Image (cartoon, rainbow, N blue to C red):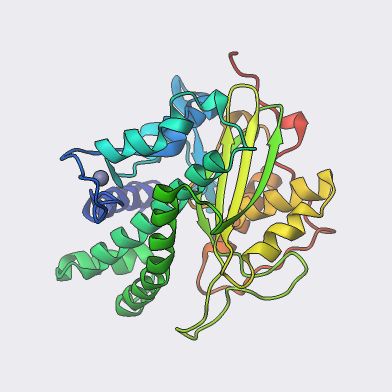
Length: 349
Ligand SMILES: [Zn+2]
């Protein structure tokens, strides 16, 4: 089989598996307030227009890049990013129409008016990031629980390992860890008391070429102390709720952590105490090494040189793999800065 044929086969396999995994279920179905019967595609980066801001024309079509969308280059034999359409890039059927429109109205009716000095706005963005990651976990559990040998053979090929049961157990434990926080966050949503979260906010007066919305579990603090690395099921993880939202003439960065997690607030404090340039580089590291629900503009990525592009792909593969050692941030060696004003996108005002 040629590399080209392998790419086509893998992309078919991937779309079949994503279809099987897709769940349509409202995050707030257990609350007092009734769900409507329709489950909407509630992807915040779509909703806020961020993906439209990032997309650029490639061979006649509007495309963006995501670190999860790759193919093998037939000439070099190496992984490279594959440009994709924004509609295929991000679907999230995690809220019913009723909850979605009611809850997120303060930030989505007019994203240009989002004010990071308002805890309500920071909370809603972070709440959405949590809901996306929670929904993805449920989808993975659903997928891995389907009792179909033919599908299981495909999944082993897709995930490139044989121990699907261990993967399922891991996902179940992860969801179990998230459940108490889901309850705390839902209570905060309705009581409008947002004190369960610590926030780190950062705003730029130009449009950066990246967008992201998800929960991340960094393996180390920036000072090198290990966190979130444990095989003990009782270990308490410290997730970082991450939103990077490019808008027409500014960019919002909101990181949040549960106050009762052991290391989340320390991680945010480290960023708080950095000067501008080290901060931008540290945020770039945070984005690129956790980049699941994360997108880039071709205007930035296409203009990087070959070794920079390769470095980014390698970094994400290495940090996303379960079989490679965890990566530690080294500010002296790490040179990339996604938040550099020289990469600011030209947007229609
Ligand atoms: Zn609902």
